[in-house]
Image (tube, rainbow, N blue to C red; front, top):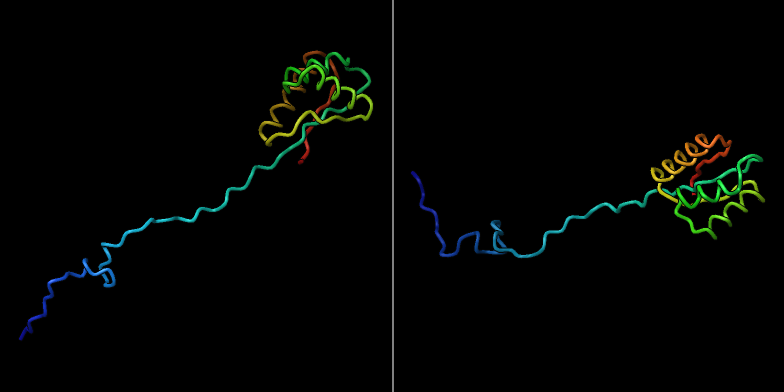
Length: 119
């Protein structure tokens, strides 16, 4: 025999403490993993005894968007110290700038070397 069940005037969905908690209000939050900043790389010019200083200054102004003064300072660093920092960029940007420098040097028949290193 089937026994009758007790019916209440309040449904489970109306009872916020009961199993049907449909009436709860709040903000659903999802924890996001912290995004890591991309690694930075220095683009370096290496000195040689053949590439004209004017070519290096023009390259720094064209590829790296340096002012005449900034380009001259970097060129002098390269000339006096054997190496100079052209800028610090994400890997993809640094890699592209190195390729642009090497391509321009090759087109101008200059042995200028350029590389990148982790900053």
